[in-house]
Length: 370
Image (tube, rainbow, N blue to C red; front, top):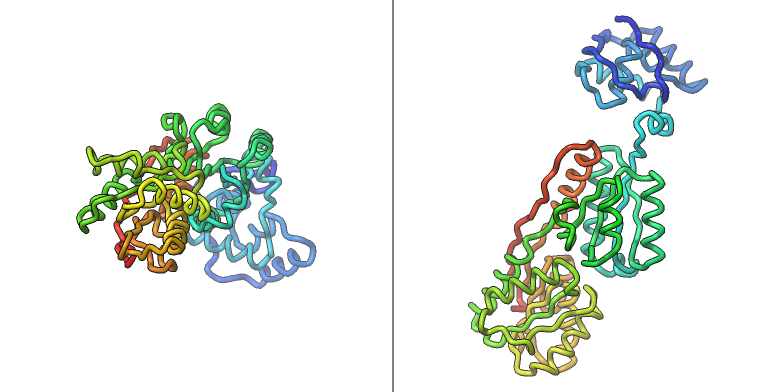
């Protein structure tokens, strides 16, 4: 089989054909070629010689392995190890116009990245899913105007192939800016006001909140309150709506308090406000485990036993839920799956393939707090 001519960004261009059939054994001459390549720095031609295939076949393996037999693919992989050949990513980027890098953009103050365990789960899951595709992840925060402008400049500079947008708020200018850009974006949670333009992966927050509210009523609690997340977030709105769906005519304004942020401090402040408004409440559904931990601290200081005086329930089933005293009854939000699905959708978008938003089911988890 005739070798193909060199391409720009050595070995990075696709080529037609079905690939070579390499020799089953490694020839002594190939071993010598591998040693020479290691001494002077390997090239794609060295890989082809050691593998016993054409230069074009090596090129196809480096570009995803299309039209290459399993035997030839394995031979090229072995030859790359033997010669120490590493793909020149800069040269590849010149040809493919891709950076092989994705931005994980958190639209929250950076301190919440370290406080809220949900963000760590998402970050780890996205990093692992991208690494499996040989794509790197860069973490950026956009919790202030200056940070948002820095993120947008970075995007426009072509430094990333796509954006994973985490914890969006309705009215956030970054949503409109990214919608108008050419950079593919996938959001975690509904991007309020942009659902038709920005694909997303979300938990079924409304249904999860319905199930939790039903559970509390089924346990015999009469004055069931809710601490919502910020009402400019999809979780804040949808979890409140699920609560109201079930409470119906029993819904009372004094039993509803909205936290300013999904944090321990936010939960503390909201719980203190709720006790002032409705001291006779006997259960509270808190729209995140982290906020629920803050609510538990306030109830403990107020001398209210949990669940004896007040039942407390959370949302997310984060690692916080199992470590509170008592452990939290909560709604499981499968963030590991959400991370994997976000990466899958984003990489499809990077390849200009159509995608549809995805809503994931939730699950009630009963522990000792309610």
